[in-house]
Length: 152
Image 1 (cartoon, rainbow, N blue to C red):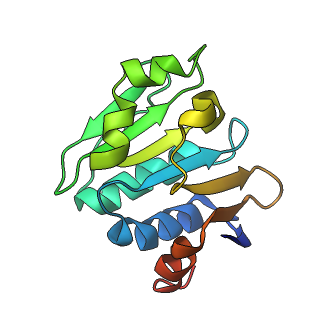
Image 2: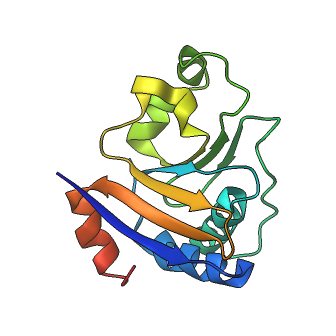
C-alpha cells in the first residue's frame, strides 16, 4: 500500500530549506529518498539543505553532477547521488549504491536511472518547477506515519 502527500508548495528556496530541515532528523540508516524532477525543480537545493541540517553545520555541498556521488560522514553516512550520466543501472552497483541503500541515508537525483534497483521502501519526492515550485511525496505507507510526526 502506498500513500501520496502533496503538492506541498515551495515558493522560495527558504521554503525548500525549511522542508528539508523538518525531514532531516527523522531519517535513519537504510532510508532512500528518490528525488524526481526536471533540471531546476529544486532537487539539489533540497539535498543541500537536508545534508546541512543533518550535519548541524554549514558544509560545502556541491552538486554531484560530475562526481556522481558525494558522501558525508555523520552518525549515519549520507550519500548524495546524481545519476543523470549513468547509461545502465549496473553502473549504480559499481558505485556501491546497493550497499549504501542498506547502511546509509541516500539522496538520489535522477532515480529513473536505477530502473528495478530502486529500493521498494524508498520515498519518492516529485519536484515540479511550476510557479510556484512544489513537491509531492509518494511512498510506502510507513512513510506516511513517519512524515506525520513532523506534519509534512
